[in-house]
Amino acid sequence: MTILVTAASGRLGRLVVESLLARGATPAEIVASARDTSKLTDVAARGIRTVELDYARPDTIAPALEGVDAVLLISGSEPGNRAALHQNVIDAARAAGVAKLVYTSAPRATTADFVLAPDHKATEEAIAAAGVPAVIVRNNWYTENYAADVARAASTGVITSSAADGRVASAARADYADGAAAVLLEDGHLGQVYEFGGDVTWSYDELAAAASALVGREVVYQPLTTEAHVAALEAAGLDAGTAGFVAAIDTGIREGVLAHTDGTLSRIIGRPTTPLVEGLRAAVEVEDAAA
Image (cartoon, rainbow, N blue to C red):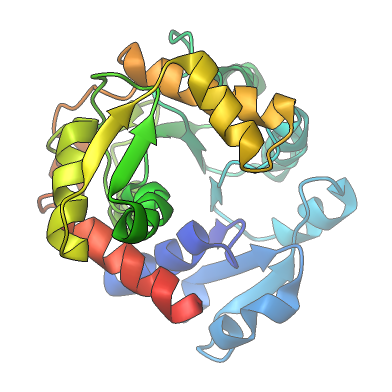
């Protein structure tokens, strides 16, 4: 079986490639794609074929899918425009007769009132309408999303949010990558919609406690109103639209969109998901190394 990983130059895509190899796939069975293949030279050096694939350019998609049995469609990073870009990949996958399309969606994408949901809901509906055999993996939050908050807390002693007492079932990016690799390689997943998340939910008070353990000082959680959060983000340099979007994510967290966990991810990857403190420690180390 030949598996194509889209966005393989990104953080999730690279980890999926690593997980596929660790789970027994050979380099010859993997195709790694990116808009800029020069960012995949290290992947190519391992004997993995690399191809150009740009969601916005259908002329790059069909050639990339030639001879491919399974495709991991990693969702794009342009809110509001993702569904149209994903449609190009879905259409090409249907035309190529792909036997399995795995899509990285958002938590409760078809039912949640969440600012991130509409693009993913539209994509899931497009996959169903196309009739491509598929597996939907709805990834909860990445623990790595909070690396910057922890880094700031080292100097401020504060983590702020307008999520109130909302809980988050985050997991490490590597956990989600393992989940994607498992459903790509294994039989028995077609037609399933999986809500992937960490084994344990946490609150922002618990996030602050984890940050305290990592930075060696007391860190407290300071809850904000949505209006105060937007104002703080604008004061930090975000435009009004982006500030409102970020605050709307916290509204979703406050309303419980990310609080679901049922052990599905750990069951599929065959191990517990990465604990919060461990995931944050690794994420902060990566951020420090990149600085």
